[in-house]
Length: 151
Image (tube, rainbow, N blue to C red; front, side):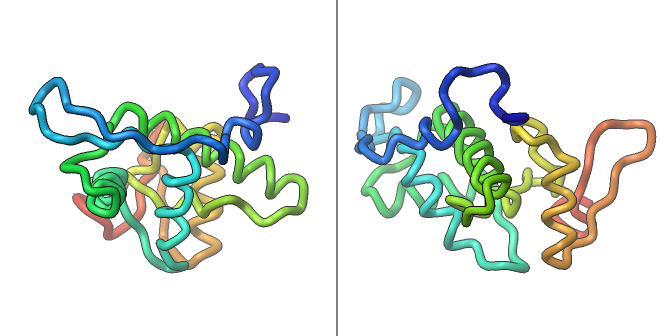
């Protein structure tokens, strides 16, 4: 599969619905921090309605609140966002419904997530299909949702 990045395991297999989230003590603050699962992240993304956008920061806050933690691990969440995106693209390529509309997550300044396995061009195409205006910054390989955040 084109978004598999050479792994022998498919993105869908990496969703691991058998995993349970954990709450640990943050090494930085000592407060309860959630270590989420791919399916917990996908569930939160599914709540972002067509035509709406959110950011990883807002998503982490929402997940933490629901699980009774002060925060959600940003590094783990970033990895899981890539897994959800890769699985969604595999599912769409197979004619299946995607686990979550990962393309509705953009950075705080409206830029598209460069770490999506399918790349920002695919995310831009999916956002345009939902009515968002997305532009590629001239001379750069970065994309941004027009009118979101700092744009």
